[in-house]
Length: 382
Image (cartoon, rainbow, N blue to C red; front, top):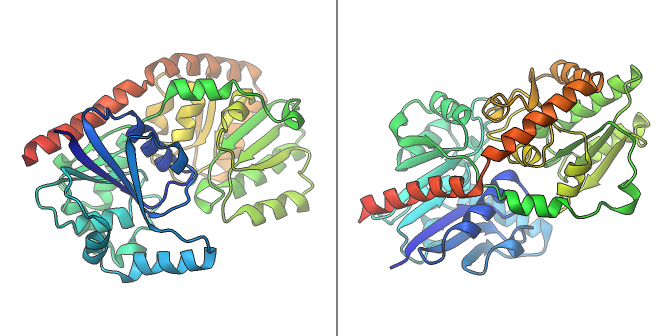
């Protein structure tokens, strides 16, 4: 008899958690698991990449952007979670997984299925970046929801530590560290595809970054640091891949400071890996992360990483000296970027470290670790 597993997430858009969920469900054995992915909004870029054996269900299927936003707000803030659960979850599952903070966690905390084991994934350093209270209306209600879960799966040790600082009443024995699933073979193959013709010739050194254009990712301060270094005579090209609410502000800054020759806002690409493979190093300017999926992907491509000090970065970079971790400030980012631009030897050494580190990142090991949590929870419920 197949084990029935429900994964819940807001939407299958192009984020790190969504990417990790895609790789996880696609690589869970269909001979052992019957998998359903439930989203509140449809239309995410990863929907079409779900494997045939993964069933996808969505609540809001509407093309009108304004109507979608209104319906999303109603679902998030007005509809009681127990009603939402009754509306969306029509079958009985062995395991129910909230794969993201906020609404998925809120809804599954109200699950009527007393036999199912519940798992909540935490992808963010909740001491540095915490906005899910707006869905719960109070931090206390948020904490109470997490108390109802059997397992809290944190994507890094730093995320786990921050979670228990934020929610000290949740027993520490409930939580564990489960790293995001990444398909190294797929990434390597996609990276071999050619760049667009107008980008095949680039003035070096070239830095690349990939992520949603939002405040959390810190691209505003990255552009200011970029201009500061140009003014000091340290030329470098910067590729930024992604889309989001800060795009107009970033474009205005680039235009106002005449940075069009050195900065390329390239928009969202389903396959960012050729851009990453052709760059000299990867930059993470984030104000907060949980365990950066895209920084891990950079390592898999042998790319050195320059990053602000976010959760998970020391776990990723320190062992094989494959990156530089700066203070999580604009000045820290400036000093780190300046160090790399002035030292080709340092970049070469970091690249060698990245080549060693990528041998340790294996999809099979990470899927197996999550399967152990899924099966142990299900076994306890039967």
